[in-house]
Image 1 (spheres, rainbow, N blue to C red):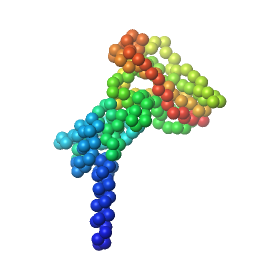
Image 2: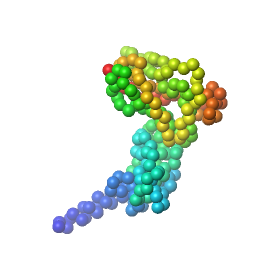
Image 3: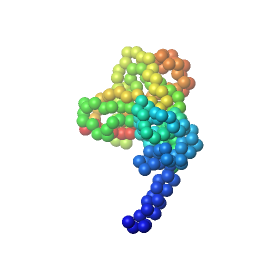
Length: 218
């Protein structure tokens, strides 16, 4: 064997460890820097006999429900305020990842008219948000250079009980675009609301609005 090969492999391993990730890019029991990054950024390094089998998601990726499956390596449990993981940096908040606190997204970028669209509202804030109990989504269509409101996805006779979305969780609903062309979805949300009540009766402390990236119906 070429004597230079072990030396080169050693350099590669050292570089990987310096990034705070194991050879599979996820971190592991032999990675002391990953453990330090986890703890330094507010996470808990799980060395139990049954740690989750998946690593915290990368910036912008949806959370993975995997706590019921035992893994063979320790894992970093990032806090709700910083649910993402980046090699070499540790647990990351949505704002540090360059993400909005609440994100609206769809499962595709192009749809046929009348097809089903899976719309998602993801809560990256450290506390619950509350969505409309009847129609959480509204439509906009690009006309010329302006986005024109097309109304709510559903017409409601009653606002309904607000939908609570816990920190780090998502709400998913299937919708169908009422118009063709370049469109996008919006979702209003409120915080500090009393659960189990309509938004108008929940004494919410503040509200905001999240907008998806544009997508095409053609």
